[in-house]
Length: 393
Ligand code: SAH
Image 1 (cartoon, helix red, strand yellow):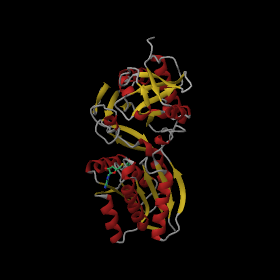
Image 2: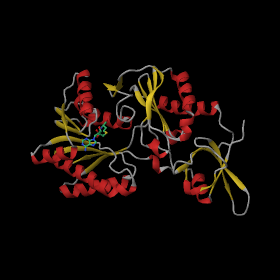
Image 3: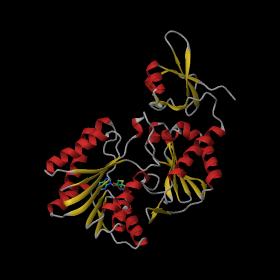
Image 4: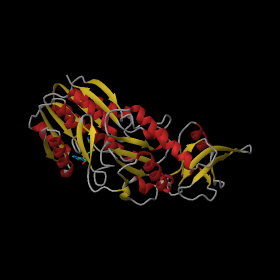
């Protein structure tokens, strides 16, 4: 095995890495040892008293603010078996989680010890994202190992995420293996849903909300509203659960068309409204509409810390308006997928909205992403999705 380049970090970074955090930043870097973007390197710290300690192995990328993404404390240069074992461990977890759905996340980046690698499964199709230079460099190997292990009909690359730009990687999509020309049908919580891995949003579907969507059916009653619906995953579950009327609201006409097709596929009926959600909620309130259940699942309003103030106002506005639309005993299923909106802050925002509507709101459930999106302890950056279920008297 060839010797790996040694990348030296400062003591502050060394402490963070020893505490289990998986990242070192550009400002932590002392020496790059001639390492190339995407290479696996040995991370070391030199102590003031002299002497050098190994901290483990990492993906290196000098083009990113996150220059090092830790792979673990191992010292042996990773070969094919190392990567195969990491993938196998991730697959084994998903097998153990079970569930009858035919779609889910198989690999979730740092949380599965594969920084930057995302693998989603839609029936017999795999969708890959390589969002770090290290994962990008190993893309061919990952496709080969996954193909040998799972025999998918196709492997699709959805590397059109803006996260790639931050790593100095080009945005690209397409087929990496097999053949696929259109959408794939999956099973989610008893419903047949069509997902388009090549052209849908994200990798085709918002898999992180899967368990929350299925859970929503338990609250179905009367008139329901699914706002920021995308293809209506929440709304269809509400309808399946026995709601009398369900309206999907999204600004994407294409997403609503897909939602209508999914509804037909399952013998369900839903209404759709192509609109800006902010306007829709305001107009519905002005018109005196009332609903038993409102779902809010907006995109990340806060993309960075600087935009958090404006984002917090946006979150509060839609939540306040949604609360005002609820009939007595009505339920609000409200989410934020913005990492910068920490859970405490999210709860404080909802508390303010509850105060403004003047109704003592009950918190029924504090939920997160589906279990196939594990979190890594000591790595708050990986915790992003909050989903609260509230009931208004
Ligand atoms: N609830 C969905 C995922 C929603 S993703 C699910 O479980 O599958 C967020 C959605 O909000 C996207 O479909 C996007 O098209 C839509 N969107 C973003 N901004 C919007 C706005 N201002 N008004 C209405 N829809 C918006």
